[in-house]
Length: 394
Image: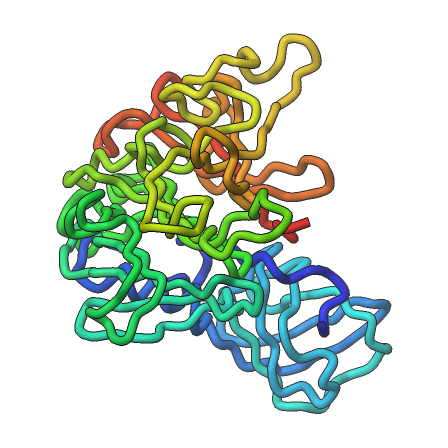
């Protein structure tokens, strides 16, 4: 790869310049997913590209770019082809973006552009306000996610093993018997063009979608619903051809779609394409932390397994990886997401805050057990953490 550092994990957030707008308007979710997963966004023309001492500096005009520290950009048009492709941002301001490179010092003579890099998915089928997405990663199961964005406040989602057009698929997960019409993902808890806050992160095989549907009122209302789609890290050393999952809500009110989310709740809201034998149809299961409560607890909020944050012993924040269960045992791990089995984390970590731990940087999502139209507080809001350094599968 062109970059000397890993670029497999890409993250996107609503407060990035030029980020797609998610709101209570029909079609806004598909537009957001397409921009982040498939096309990228925020194209900028570069006035100079200079390499000095292992640091490449892109200079541009016209105000802030979409780039952000730790974001992955896609560079094109450099005469030195090794400078093109995906690059991880070290720093960014209103006139420059920098990234690490192993290329020799010099000024590039190409007509250079850059934009926020897409996560490596494709939109394979579509019609008005309905779209089907699939991973292009060579190691992915390449199963399909159908997104129906015909409602202003939420989308309906179904996974499929195969599809032949936007409305025709086989091997649905969840099945119609498990969740008629598909699961729910919240957009906004009001029908309004006012933007809401969100985070999306992907390693090309899985993506997390964390949305705060009440944040159009302001960031005091940052209760997030964490959902996701894609391939687990299989526990079976022989492989798992049906490891693709879809996490969803079964609640019809956008303000309360926090049931069984990926960073809290014990409801059966994670559909796996098939059971571990590979036979039959979809199974609906739960996610659990390896360390923490198996009950209806949220990360960094209502789980006191390891006490309160900060630890009274050493001041630490304690995190756990998570898994999805099948037949009472771990079927596969959730890539890149960390759960906190302590209470009170929201007092120190709000949505978009970053955490450095174990040589990796994490971005904070804020799960809640209350309606998104209730102001976030320490008792009702917690914190979970998405790895934005990567790789997720090591």
